[in-house]
Amino acid sequence: MEMRGLKQIRKENNLNQLKVALDLAISREAISHYENGKRNPSLEMLVAFSKYFNVSIDYLITGKDFEKK
Image 1 (cartoon, rainbow, N blue to C red):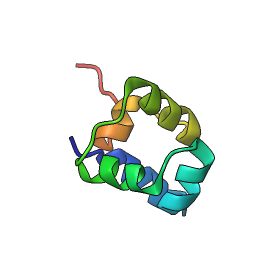
Image 2 (cartoon, rainbow, N blue to C red):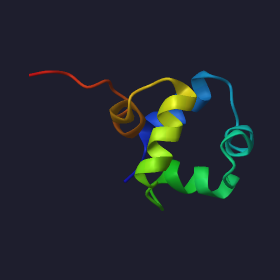
Image 3 (cartoon, rainbow, N blue to C red):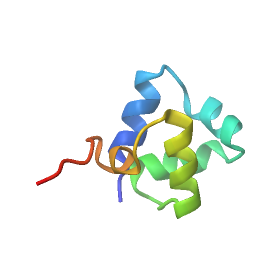
């Protein structure tokens, strides 16, 4: 699953993959794999990204906020 929102929010905050990886104590390659859909993050990692960027998990995955129907 490609995490469109993760790449989008990282770029909006002018952060490179290495900075985010160092701040979250993971590898730069892991960030790249998550952004490109080569690997899926654990639930704990999704929560860490959500807190780090102050966005919802839904946003990290889809690039859009959750909409009620």
